[in-house]
Length: 208
Image 1 (cartoon, rainbow, N blue to C red):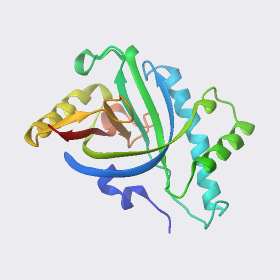
Image 2: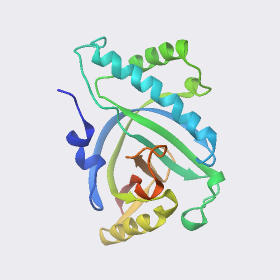
Image 3: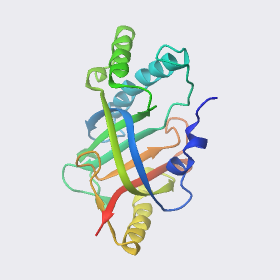
Image 4: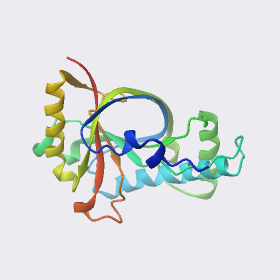
């Protein structure tokens, strides 16, 4: 049976309201970058992730890495911060620093990933293939909600999360190093009008 994250992990990816949950260790293919995500370089970073993810998906489906396993590729995610501390309405997009990623099934290993990168590099070109990294990360306790609409309107949704933090005596702590929050992109910006976009906004949290 095909594993579909929208059904099997609905609570993780499709919150209907601000939700507290605890996440286990998960595998990711990641790549880091900086600058305005509206510029072409951000798309080039994304373009390095998907060929490797699809290579691994097909290897699993064909049974080349154990028993055949079929799944839907996970949504694009990103963790974000800025080099100048700007946030909210005063955000300086040129100062953004990010790590974007695609989650991978638990049955895959770093060795599987390295082999996939090698295969992909023999067929395709992208300046960031060599920068891709395999990471296993346990985010632990998080607070998340769904944001509907353009990315520029996210501050209003983050303000809702701040209210929940205060009510539950929680604080935001960095994730995956020094990044300040996570976004999970449930819609494709290339095919979806900004007002119809759906993005999970997530904070890693700890008690005050």
